[in-house]
Structures are given as structure tokens and as C-alpha cells.
Image (tube, rainbow, N blue to C red; front, side, top):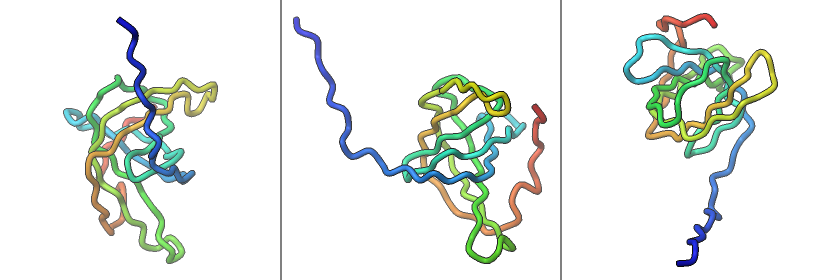
Length: 121
């Protein structure tokens, strides 16, 4: 039997190189981990972090975005997602990149991250 060749998707979502603060945690955890977005699309986000998670980890994410008002009223994107890819990096400060497929999101206007218990790494 000949091996099957799977077609690569041709309609990959456009990535935007946006660098925003992000906090994420596994759904069963109470501790948030800090990172930075490397790029964002409507289907997912690539997060730089010093903490690694297992593939297929289910996450909650909070991404701080600046709106065009001088940064006085930041907003947050709240979403759930799953880790679909891990990338090892040679950078000492952020050695891991997590590709996260997003599963629904909402935008919240508030002062972000004021209520998060953050793990210092």
C-alpha cells in the first residue's frame, strides 16, 4: 500500500508580529505564567516564555493590548486554547515558544493583570 500524502493547508491565517504582555495558565492551575506574544492571528498566538508546557495542554490566556489612546486604557483579550507546537530557542531570557490554537476569545476593557498571582521564574 502506498503512503498517503496529506495536503498542506493553503489558507493559513495571516500572522501579525505583535509583541504584547501575556499571562497564561493550565486550566487546572491557579498560578499564571508570564510571557510575550511573538505573533498573533485570528486562529492562534505564538508566545515566548521561560516556562514550557506539554503539547496539548489546555490553557487560559490573558493578552494585554494597547488601544490608540496613549496606553491610558489598556484592554485584555481573554481566551482559551491548546498548545499545538513547542519551539526551543537559544535565547536565555525566553528559551521557549508555545504555539497556541485559540478556542474562542473576548475583549475586556479594564486595568489588566491586577488580580493575577504570578509565578516568578
